[in-house]
Each structure stands twice: as structure tokens, then as C-alpha cells.
Length: 429
Image 1 (cartoon, rainbow, N blue to C red):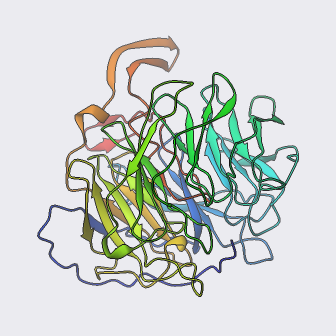
Image 2 (image 1 turned 90 degrees about the vertical axis):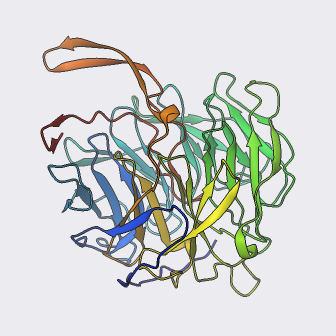
């Protein structure tokens, strides 16, 4: 889908008082060195790398800024630096933090990397090219598999093909073919590690079963979650009640999915709560927060004249009441005068949400009003020493309830992996 990067700044203002218990926005004290250009990824050491528009010669950028929390673990008071540049420029591309802490990126709807991938080593601060995939990647979806490989969609041909990237051997292999079109869809990992998406422009769904390496036809979807103009949709999140929440792009539509917990039987879809004002979420970021609520971005529904309308409103979706509550924009005003697709979120290790806008060097942190859910906390059953300075932590629920934040097809910023936080007095390590 053709988009234009919006260069705009977030204006500071006074926050209005809400009668509901909602979270609060706080500006990151220091501005980033370069203007944001999309995805933010939490690394295994807790720092966050943020794609920027700097570097290269095409205005797309190959540079990432890194936000490191301060000694007290605060991202608001954190410091900025810049990591080594990528080989290629990329905008709207695949991304995953690998099990060994490296970062996989591939494709790009814009830039020089549309048919190429590379892997970042944060310890060595270097990038390594992957072999060329078999087809164009563009703004394709990806998901981590249980064995550490990456399931990579291909934006070519029938728009149903996939490849699997093996980071240990730096190779691609042919993946299973989807039943419906995966392009423009949002992929979401369920609790059983299967991967669910709604077929583009349709009311059918697909689910990938890792143990069988197949895409099965899943249940019918009772509402249209794609708009009919740009065929876009919003983010998705697993909820604490075991259901999945999908933000539609038009007419106030959302969907709820109840998993079957079976590798052969389909789950059950139902109509979700109506988005206020019959709004939509074309390429709209959301984040499942530590208190179980989902922070959502919403715009007016797309039209033939404007596939990505503005302004953007912000809501918290509460699964317990199945309802939305509006919250202020980061600037303190009711809305943000921009489209949803230029915005992004990532869930931080401290339970907060980092927010960015393309074209801006200003970042915000959203703090949820509620305490972290008890059911989302890990259960630690043991600690073993593996060697000098190395320990093995034993327990369950280290991957949390959901993958964290979600966007649509263009960005993946999953944070469903454990990070150990050590404290000594007021200092955090």
C-alpha cells in the first residue's frame, strides 16, 4: 500500500482530567539524535533500538538510535546513542529479536532492501547479510517459531507463500503455503505457539501449526476487519482471558477469537466491541499492557479518497468490560493530528509502553493505571549455576500473556521473551 512518511512533531500541552482510571503520558526527557522512521525493538539487555530516517541517500534511512534506561531503570530519563548502520535502507519491513539476542530484519516496502535481509549482533555492533530470499519480501509478516527459526511471508506471486529462516545456519528454506492471502494481514501467536491471521479482504482465517508445519483453515470471521480501499487492518493481541483481540480498519469493527487448543480443530470467532465513532485502525498500533488492558490507536474509517485518514484518537480496551475508554493523546490534546500508520508502540520491560511518531525526535512513555496482572507474572521454581557468572532460571510463564505490541503487517515488535532485571539499592541492572 502506497504511503507517505509524515514529518511532524508532537506538541507539548496540558493533559485534561479524565473521570476514568486510565494511564498517563510522560515525555522521554532527551530527544533522539535522529527522526523516528518506524519500528522500535527491545533487545535482550533491555535497551530499545529505534529505526530512523537517517543514513543512506534515498531519505529512507539505514540508521537506528538506541535508548538505554538510566541507572534507576527509567526509560524516561534514559540516554540515546546510535548503533552501526544497516547495509540497506528500509521502511516498513520484517523484524524479529532472535533467541540468541541478535536482531533479524528483512525486506522493505521502500528503500534498497526489498529483497534482502540482514542480522544485527548487539555485542559486536555489526550487521551480517542473509542470503537472498526466493522472492520479494517488501512489508511482509514474520513470526518466531518454537525452535528459534523465523517464519517469513513473501510478498510475491499468489501472496500465499512463505520461507523459513534459520539463524544458526544463516539459510532460508521453503515454508508452507497459506490457504488465503497473507499480505496486509496481521499475524498473531496464540498460547499454543500456533500463528493466526485473517485472510486479506476476506472473512476466513488461517492458522499455522508448528508441529505439523502446515497452515490449516480456521474458523469463519463474522465481521469484515479489512477496509475495501487499501485492504488494511489494525493490530491484534492475546488477552488475559485466553481470547484474541483484533482491531479492524473500518466501520467500528473488531473481532474476538477463542482458540480451540487443538492442532486440527478450528477456533471460534465472534464480533468484538464497536470502536467508538465507527472508527477504524488501518495499520494502527496497539499494545497489550501489564494491567491487561490494550492501548489502541484509532482513526476515522478509510474512504476511497483517503485510505489513512486523520486525526488519531487513543483508547484503552478493557477485556473485563469489553469496552473502550478514551484517553488523551501524548501531547495532552484529545487527538493527534496525524494518521495511525506513522505511529508505533513497543512494550517495555518495566510494564510501560514506548510511543513514537515518524518524523519526530520526541518519544513518550505511557504508564498504565493498574497494577500488573498476577496471572501475567512468571513463577520461578529454581535457580541453578551453569558456570562462572552463568545461571539458569527455572519456571513458567516467562513469555507473558501476549507478544506485547502489534501494528498490522508492516512492523513486528514482539517482546514475549524473558529479561532478567537485577536491583541493588536504587540501581537496576
